[in-house]
Amino acid sequence: MELAPKPPLFRAGFARLAMRRAAGLAPSLEAQMRATMGPALCRAFDEAPLLGWIPYLVDVRMAEGVLAQRGAAGLRAFVLGNTAEAAQSAAMRPVLDGALRIFGMNPGSLLRVLPELWKLSYRDVLAPRVERDGEHGVRIEGSSVCDEMLESEAAHCVISAQAEGAMAFAQTKVTVAPVVIDRARRTMSVALSWARGRG
Image 1 (cartoon, rainbow, N blue to C red):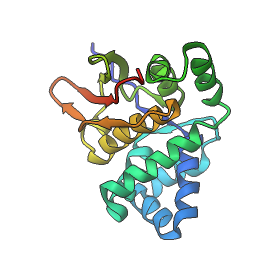
Image 2 (image 1 turned 180 degrees about the horizontal axis):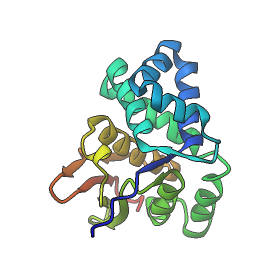
Image 3 (image 1 turned 180 degrees about the vertical axis):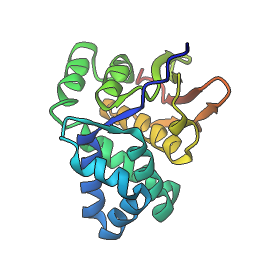
Image 4 (image 1 turned 45 degrees about the horizontal axis):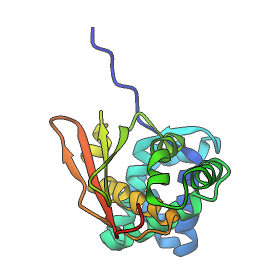
């Protein structure tokens, strides 16, 4: 008998951070995100403890709300801001500082810890791995991608912006290729490249 897949989950504290930033940017943005989430997901969001886990669909619907109001460029900017603030959290900051201290201030340092950072925020959404793609590039590959991510353009934009935001901590400007989704194989891939001398 085939086991049912585990439900994909998102860390409640990072969802709260996103909603708090939305409220600070514009009350209408927070309202749009809540409307897109709907009552059941709003209840799960509101009632979850800060370090608890909530359905990943909350993250997807929040992103879809931002996309509906601000477009793809607005969603990218919103996620970049969330990523920058999340990196200062008690959960992520020690991991980032340790990697940069041990391996140096370069993209390779962050690539080593990217899967671990992902696990702090997400569970059973996808299985990430990072592969070098030439001397000045990397490809983030995900397998066993959940339905919620496979089907949401907003979720693809979030992944792309998170990858871009992560590289900012190595003081590196990257070019991010469009996310490639293979629904049949349940995989995703996003390629990043940067200027010579930063790898």
